[in-house]
Structure formats: C-alpha cells, structure tokens
Length: 195
Image 1: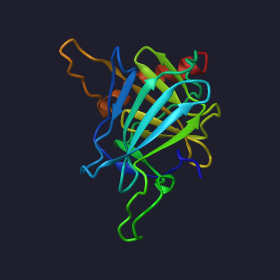
Image 2: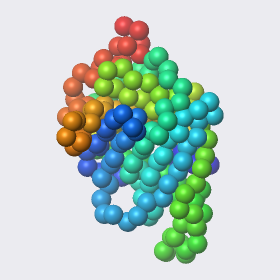
Image 3: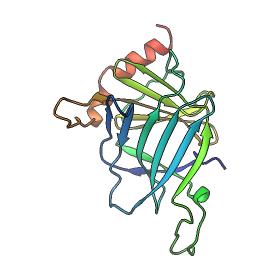
Image 4: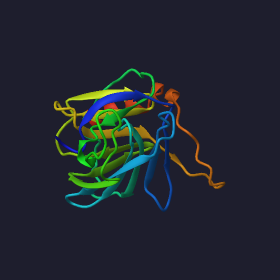
C-alpha cells in the first residue's frame, strides 16, 4: 500500500491556503481536536519537496506545505467540474508509521516517514495544483474550497485549490467553501480542456 493511500474522509473547517516569498505554499485544515501530528516528507523524483502532517489517531490531513516546488508544469492536468461539498480532508493509512500500541489504543512507532513521488506544481492565477503522480486522477472529491484527485486505487494524485498572497500585515486571509462556488474551478476546466 502506498504511503499516500486514502482510507476515508473527515469533516473539517474550511481550508486556509497561503503563499509567501519564503514558503511557496501552506494549506491548513482544522479537522477537530488537537491530538498531535505525524509527518510524511514527500521527495520528488525530479525535484521538489512536500511535507504532509496528519492526525496521529485517524490519519486526517492537517497540513500540506510545499517546501520546494520542483518541476513546474504549464497545465493543471486533468479537467473537471465539481459542485462544492462540505469541507473535508482525506484520511491516510497509518500503516507506514508502524504501531507500538494495541488495536484498542493505537500508538504509531514512528513520528515521521519519508517517501518519494512524481511531484509537480502548477499555478494559473490563484489556482494552485500540487501533483504527486504523472498519472491522471480517476476521480475527484470536492472538500469545500479544495479538490482532491485520486487514483482508482484511492492513492492521492493531486490537490487543487485557491491560495491567497500573504498580506503586508503578515496575517493570511482564510479560504472558505464559498471560494469553490465561484468561477475559479470553471476557468480551470476551460483552460485544462484548451477551451
């Protein structure tokens, strides 16, 4: 099973995505109570580095940080058109972190793991796409203002969202589910399809 295998979904608050001059991109999800995090460092086979932080109990994605963009591609890959759903975030299989606990009280053996992927990154306007594979996504799941592309085997292929520039005050503006209802994703569909 891939370290990027998605085993379910968790309801969460709206995503907050910010770009700034020092860290190309940071996306945060508030998926409920603070229970500690596990780290997955994804190194691109042709460059790039992405850090994923997941909940240590259920594997829900809490944060995605693009540390180095790696290869930038001209298009966003797959075109799609989605109706916004309630904000949610994927839950990853915790198997790659190992287990020291019992089935009743799981306790990960490792706090951080490393994996590799075919990373690429693209931006058109405010729409950003982080891809973890050169394969096309078989399906997409709308989680509020963020869209997740998955393979047929439920492996994370891409994450698509709108990001805002960090303001002069240093306070990022949060994304809301309303962002996915505007024309950003429709523009993405037209550009991806060459229309």
